[in-house]
Image (cartoon, rainbow, N blue to C red):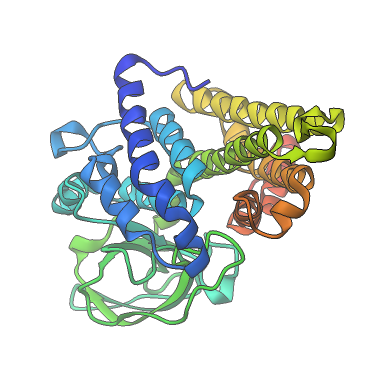
Length: 382
């Protein structure tokens, strides 16, 4: 469905090979123990995939959202935790690319597989309104000091670079923010709690504290007070990528259910579960729902690559549509696989838990429905 050319398909095949060889075999342990998928991320880095969207002149693969979504789809089919860590890295890289003169060495390191990035936008006081930080930087002699309580930072304590949002000094409203690059070596950055999520248990989405982190202008990724504009420019990367992760989770649930129905047997009937018409109907519904969500995602990718009046609407729709599809598909998978799924003998239970993450990840599905409704009614989104 992604309509890739030969070169693009070769990159996706590279990701598929890494996913099958390293990411998939690690997925069960990552979920069961809630451990960060370090080996999986390192394998992506070794394959050059941490540089997927970095321009070739900086050592990357120079790919856009179409290939990024296809790769995220493949990774999520094996391990949603790894896929989310990878997505947030791609979002961080997109922020780096807004100020390449300042971030060249980090971009080159990422292309070599030696730098993992992420976003640190959400704050406890603003909840899921990630676009409205309450923290405010102070400035003295050309240097800024950041102090903030960040929540749900994917790869917390594991990433090498954090794109941090904060109000500019003297800001009159929360959207007058600036985005800064904070590295793991900067003093004053710490993980403020543990991550024990229902799903995506390996993505280390923990709170982080910044206490008196001092930075120079060379770490500002946006113009002063223009962080909100940069956030909006990054939104399609996150929205489309998040949709791809949800589609990958749904695809994994379809595959697991198909295996179960065709291999598990009703011995007294001497037949597989697939002999039951209602089970085949459930599988068909799952297949259609997943294909529909992926097609919706691709339509949004098309709109981003060839912008028009419906582009923003489709971008907003993409995450909500795929998130709801993954919930529907994984719930149907749980019913189709019955006690075997409930007893955690199959991967579908993990897929069901992972699928719930997208709906509560900002912008939440409820927020997206409101944004879409506002857009349809000709109202301002923010």
